[in-house]
Amino acid sequence: MRRSIQKRSKVKQWKAVVLLTLIGICSLLLWGCAVQPEALKNRLVIPIDSDIKTFNPILVADAYSGIVIGFTLTGMISEDPVTQDLKPELAEKWEIQNDGKLLIFTLRPDLKWSDGEPLTADDVLFTYQDIIFNEKIPTGTRDVLRIGQSQTLPKVEKLDDRRISFSLNEPFAPALRTLGGIGIMPKHIFAPTLKVDSTKPDQKLKFLETWTLATPVDQLVGNGAYVIQEYRPSERVIYKPNPYYWKKGSPKIKQIVMQIVESPDTALLRFRSQELDMYRLRGEDYQLLKKFEARDRYKIYNAGSSTGQSFMMFNLNKGRNPKTNEPFVDPVKSKWFNDVNFRRAVAHALNRDAMITNLSRGLAQTQDSPVSVPSPYYFPPEKGLKVYDYQPEKSKEILIAAGYKYNSDNQLLDAQNNPVRFTLLAPAGARITVGEQIKNDLEKIGMKIDFNPVDFRIISDKLDNSKQWDATILGFTGGAEPNSSINLWAADGDSHLFNKGAVGEEAPFPGREVADWEKKIHELMIKGAQELDETKRKAIYAEYQQLVQEQLPLIHLTIPLYLVAVRDRVENAQPTALAGSTGVTGALWNIDELKLR
Image (spheres, helix red, strand yellow):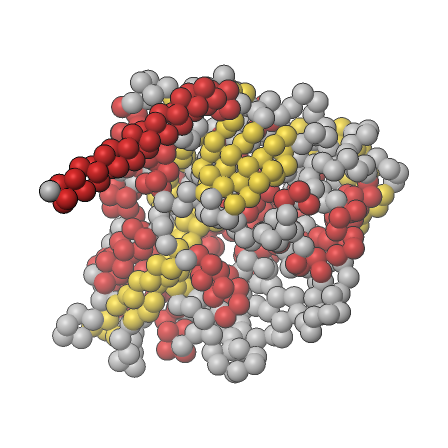
């Protein structure tokens, strides 16, 4: 009898708990219904594929940090990616004199930083002279601004509080777009950081540890349309309008929430449940999202081929660690990787058509060039660019002619009977499926591949620091201007990843060699930047693209179409691949002009 009473009592308690829970849920739902439309009507929610590494714009080495910071900083001018026209930003006008060797920018009057401090020519001078041109600060931006064979940097001079001049030692075709487009930095914030931290044994500049992810966001100062209101690692970045943005009445959207969603499947689910206002489509998403486009009130934009490049590359570095004298690459493997016939055989063994069909559902195209397909400087195969179609038997013929052989198990051996086996790294995520296919393709021609998907930070550390890696799959962002990738091709460039040399204060690497073709590619890049005649410039960059394809320091794969879904409530969206193909960035280039219904 007692057990029965206790049981009924527990049932009543359980019902009470359930009832209270339901009441709580209903209250939350009613509260949400009451405030959600008001709270969300002027909030744009967008995804980003990865967390960021820094808030310091000069130290950015990844696309995602660049995207996050991009809303908060602007340069003196910008480029309309749709029309390719230059537009005034912080500068109200610019002049080109002395046959293109002198550029003068005039800033708008009464500019201010987001903390209310005046923004003047002193900030522009400081950005270039004290930060970008400072050899103690590692940045690829400096490489992009080197001019001619002498690789000199422009001379910057303040003419008055609103005018700044750049003197060039010779004509430099990308000068206006490059110099004008770099985000200006606040001198009053960063000037004190250009001192050596005497408390630390490495004697590094304080600048290198300024605006890290640990910096409170209210200490981040900008001049763009937005400032960062909140940052939660691995969760989200929230923006609010910059009260001192130069364009009065802008931006129109009062809050932007950038959700960090590393899983594409999760991002798709969040878009379908209307948690996100934009979504960058994968090939497998298209049919599903197209089916519900009208019902769920969004539009899928097809902006053509994405910018940037996707590739596989081998470590061609023959150097040794100056501290341990250990080679960066096993000498046996290094001999394979530095054999252009080996690289050509690999290129012919990759089934790019299968990648397009199986991985991108047909919504991609083969890529054969380091220049973005939408760029006016892209040299297409129809005009003679060398391509590597899928011919595994030809791969075997190339290898045998180069001295390789097969054993009775059809395993590839080199001339010294070493089995051809190496490790292929890929960032965990979307590139895993590509890596798996590359592994299968190469094993069909007798190679043994140890495929290892890892966090991108691990790959980045190997590329930049240890230099100990065999092969990897990567991608670079791109755009219309080929010179923007010169730090990839300069032998001492910060992004010369396939044969990276000493950077900054690193000791030279014993045994490192720079091949003649590497030097030739760099020469062509310099020559292309020097040429002002557009027809001749395109011819130079065509020769550069051909040389890259012949030597294959990068074995290009496929490039997807830029497909982005945008909800109907977002007005003025004009997605274009030339504005960026990382995530939804191609739909955000005019963020200060977007509106929400």
